[in-house]
Image 1 (cartoon, rainbow, N blue to C red):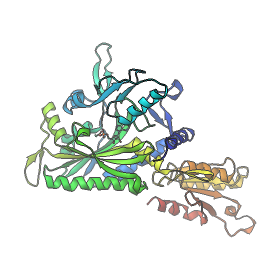
Image 2 (image 1 turned 135 degrees about the vertical axis):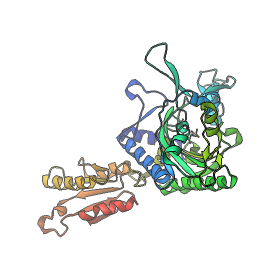
Image 3 (image 1 turned 90 degrees about the vertical axis):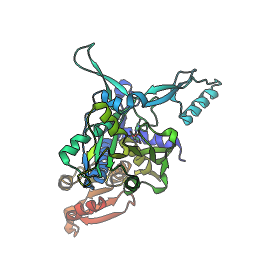
Image 4 (image 1 turned 120 degrees about the vertical axis):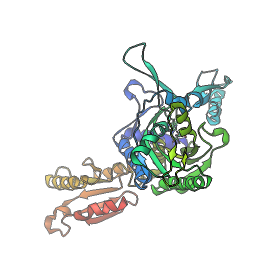
Length: 445
Ligand code: GAP
């Protein structure tokens, strides 16, 4: 296992290069919250788009929704979160720091920290702690009503099941997908964005006939799809694996769950889960709302409550794991070997010298043309070597330099060609400006 040091380096790089900043930074921060900067926003957007492309766009029968974050509080009674969305909490009697009672690693590390100071750690008995974040909604003080910020984005999909069926008339099996923020009063946020109190999820709720053979077919289909998504975006194969959750780990809604885990410097950690929710959600929301959420199968004329297979990805965790996987130190440079599809910039354009107006003008025209198709960085600071290393560190797959040959000076036969340099191999090629778009596009396919 790599050292924790790698995580610290990534945290520093993220701040230095505009990926991720501590939330409310200038006010001293707010524990468990993070702000995405210019490059982090771009990377996150690309990851969400890659997810949406795989899950929604490449399937005929999957529909997207964007449900409200604040929902009628009865939703959370129906979903079971007000009573069962709990973690066991213990408190250190020496320093009053709180931990999840089931987090053996952190509890052990905390005990060792006190032992070094010759203090003997003692813990309170575990008590149940509900993770839902509360807010007050309304205009009149004292009459404001309690709402919960969603603890998972799932309920917004299931409460719209009937709306989607009535408006889109889908045939079984079909899916409803959503990407959005979730909030949890995590007892002990940590490991950078890994465990935050505000985070983003990307989820598919896949509705099937209540039938075991159908379930087996689709559960393995979605496991494979989701694993292939990570591998297709370049995740190192032997650093990613499936792990089936023990019965004792299962959330209240799940009958079975498989996690996709990544080997981080702080151990094998969950990136996302594929969950068997059976008919938990639709049955409970039918019961608590008094609405019939059964489905009338137009092909068989049967009426039933569908079963649900869920894939639930953490966008922030995927992003962190892609960063960990891409981070490479080589001789004198740091490289983020991000897949071009998710890299914040696809290409950087440089004029060889910034004090030569003809070079700058030509470079600007190349930049403006490429910008119609890709996110492009412009850099004219320092020497070319420094600019290359600066782009390597933020994962830009290609750098294009406009030099005197590009201008066709002194009768050069290289007029309207540029040098394109590959981030990973550092090899440089001379290609025509007219070929640039296709060259970069190829790396994105
Ligand atoms: N709808 C199912 C659900 O929410 P989960 O396993 O609790 O299942 C799904 O969460 C994913 O959401 C996790 O695999 C993880 O990627 C992400 N996630 C959960 N809690 C998180 C937290 N505190 N910080 C960051 N990501 C989190």
